[in-house]
Structures are given as C-alpha cells and as structure tokens.
Length: 92
Image (cartoon, rainbow, N blue to C red; front, side, top):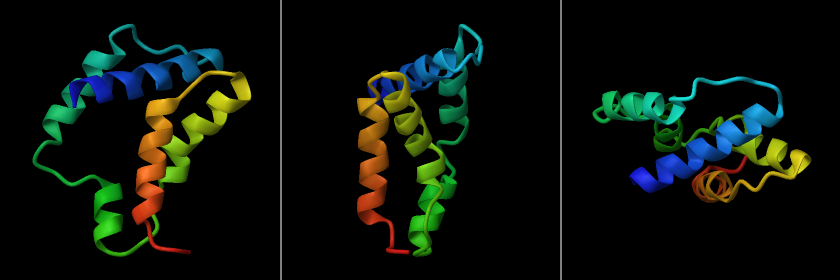
C-alpha cells in the first residue's frame, strides 16, 4: 500500500509542478500523515459508493489523469484508481 501511495503522490506532484503549482518537498510525508490519521475513517468516495451515489473521482484522480495527458505526464497509478472507482460507481 505504501508503494501505491508513493506512486499516486509522485504523479500528483509531477502534474502540479508542470502546472506551476509549487508543493512542499516533503509532500509524500504529509500525505502519509493524512493517510495514517484517516485509518479509522471512511473517505468521502467510500461513503458515496456505500450510499449508491456518484463520487467525486472525476474531480480528484480523474483531474490528475486529464492534466497529465494534456501535459504529456504519465499517470498510471491515478488512472488505475480512477478506473477502479468508475467500475463500481453507480451509473448517472
């Protein structure tokens, strides 16, 4: 799981930097802290899926994927997460 988190974060950072958004150099460490503090919680995406509602995945990982495509930055980890959620998300 740590490797997936690192890959997703690295892709997000690469896309953000290419868009001119400057992030802290310890972004992965900050994301890891958030992940640890949320260990006992359910994400909004998980809550939406449990309630049979559409998720915000298109605006989260989907945005990273689209910007990566536009900028020529590969985002395979974000693409997998986006695709997996879309597979179980209810039809709109």
